[in-house]
Length: 152
Ligand code: FES
Image (tube, helix red, strand yellow):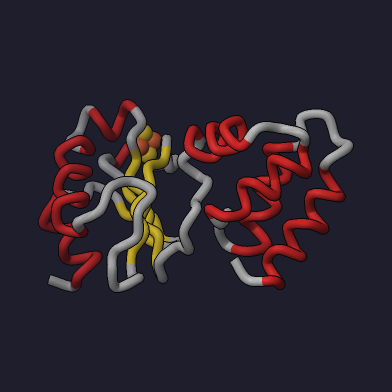
């Protein structure tokens, strides 16, 4: 973590440390400001919020939306909600993890793609659905996934 990020986090801690239940809004604010929550900021956040490192780490790792590494150029969200699961989303997610070589919450080595789960994209009539960047795509088969992601 560089000095500028540490100073940003220090200012945000000051803003949230007196707020009851301030950890969640603080973590969102850090991720919004920096793009992720650096691994080495956990101690600073814990100290500032009067919590243990384990407590802060537990919250960060429980919520899929929090990242401890910078995101890739494009984030791919795969819907894991019921309607999509019933129409092949599980097979699609296995395929996506295999071809990208990453798990949820991770970024490909070339920094291009980050993979995240999502719980409904509001597109339940045309499942399975995914979002790539800001675009939602419907009825995505493994073959269509490859076309959308790799242009294959
Ligand atoms: S359940 Fe997947 S878009 Fe709603």
